[in-house]
Length: 507
Image (tube, rainbow, N blue to C red; front, side, top):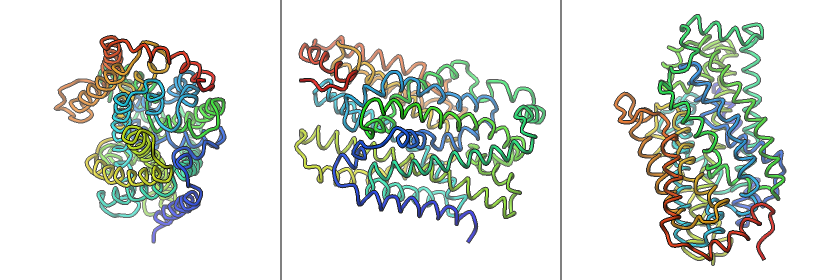
């Protein structure tokens, strides 16, 4: 058995052990959805880093930089500021107003079934859009590690995430994310030191070497994002989309209070920011030492640039050191993806079980154990659907697909969330209008754009946030203003506003 496969199996055994430990401690709905809200700021910060540093960060950003130069770096730099929106705008209100999900916030503000259904739709669409690239990246890596076909690799990952979520819930997902974050940061540091040692620890040498090898245009913008509006759209999607990602929102319910929620955001800004900054150097080093032709030959989307760089740094293909480094980095990348898909699966199953089944269908009249059972069943169904989506996404750069998912979150979930928290006149019509307009416009423009149709695109922008985000806000505003004024809802807003900013429940 190869060194690569042994390392992968070791990490898998550790994470399954965590799941077994967590399963024995997961009894109530609060345990399953929010780890009983007992995590510290550091624990939640590391888990958030594990949540946010997905396949796009570990594989896609490095691959985009290797193939397209500075345009890949633009993808990597966005997350450095994305959490500022979360820190200053929504972390505290979310913790104070919700219980487990985005639907809780909307239901608490509107107290109508139709608005809750709209929130459920937004959560499910965004999560599945985010799940697709994670499954695609996992399929590529597991195929590299084990030699099995891509389809069977995706099936293996889907079964693994079902086990993590269905048995361990949020507690297992959290500790898998913490372990993964530590491994990811450690692997990144090792690769970075080894790569820089080849250029005498002068990063500028990497820039100069790649420029000499691929031409001056390699370090200029426009190699991938050829339309300047794409760069603006990418920035908008990052800064506002992260605040609309349901699987990120749920992390703020795992801590005991709003102060801890804010502190956990500071933790993740430093942890994830350090890693994202390193992906640019990983991409440049891969282009310089491995070469773009070899990267494209391994995966046309560039998703294997970092594992191939690690193999080269360890001594090359066939050497013990090369196999050891490849195995370590690829196994950590698989752990990265498993942690993220577990969080996405948990968030989606929570929305289906808690929001749809318990609150929308049964009016909140469901016992805790039955609710957990429904959530576990939902996790199985979601896992099967995720496998199908992963198989369909083969060969597309995962970073591009992830950013499109963030675009959907920015266009649909963010307008509804921020207006629910801060606009008195906002009502059920606005929730439905904002969700519908944001979802339809972002998904439709993404499907006819270059990311999905390539040279046959009917729409010029890779990322449509610059258009779909205003459409989402416009739909929310028109939906609110065209509906009859809900005076009871506006009266409740004062109590709701007090709760989101102070944590004091309305009397």
